[in-house]
Amino acid sequence: MIGLVGKKIGMSRVFKKNGFSIPISIVEIKNNYITQIKNIKKNNYFTIQITTGYKKKYNKSEKGHFKKSGLIPGEGLWEFRVFKKKKFNLGEKIDLNIFSENQFIDITGISKGKGFSGTVKRWNFNTQDSTHGNSLSHRVPGSIGQNQTPGKVFKGKKMAGHLGNQRVTVQNLKIIKIDIIKKLLLIKGSIPGSIGKNIIIKPAIKKNGV
Image 1 (tube, rainbow, N blue to C red):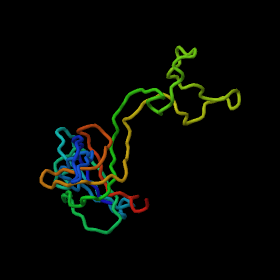
Image 2 (cartoon, rainbow, N blue to C red):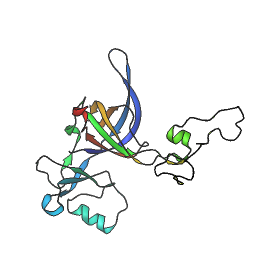
Image 3 (cartoon, rainbow, N blue to C red):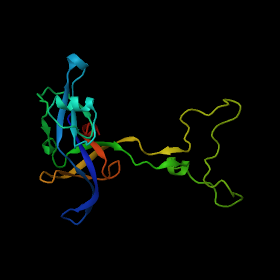
Image 4 (spheres, rainbow, N blue to C red):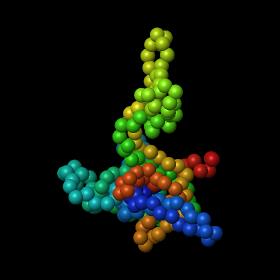
């Protein structure tokens, strides 16, 4: 399933003919090039590896890897699993033509980091009473276990900790408009990550089954 790597530009809105506004996320799709083709004989699976953008500082191994495909080092390397037999070439460009308007897609990115957060913000816990004798435990999570049996805190217990800065996938987002000239995708709704970060865009895999 071939996809693209783009950069989140920000959010805006578009108006329909009936006056309703649709919140959209704007994604810029720079040139995506194939840097490596992995096949079943060598790697036991078939994927294409792509890159985008330009990297100023790189080491010798990166330079040698990109030299095989005749490309300058990009910002990173991403792989897309391919199931249908199709001929690909090293250095081949993949553009916005693989997507169409009103198509549903899945987007993967790194969510914004929120730092160390309590249970109210992290897990949407209810706060305790504001009054009635409560003076220091308004946002305290409360009991985290039982008594001597089992005598431990179970794994996966929802507690305070680091929030955000994780790989997140949002499924079944709709493409509202494609601007081929400016290389922009207008996608309905919000997408993970901060402005300027790379995101992965793939055709939706669950839309037919929902």
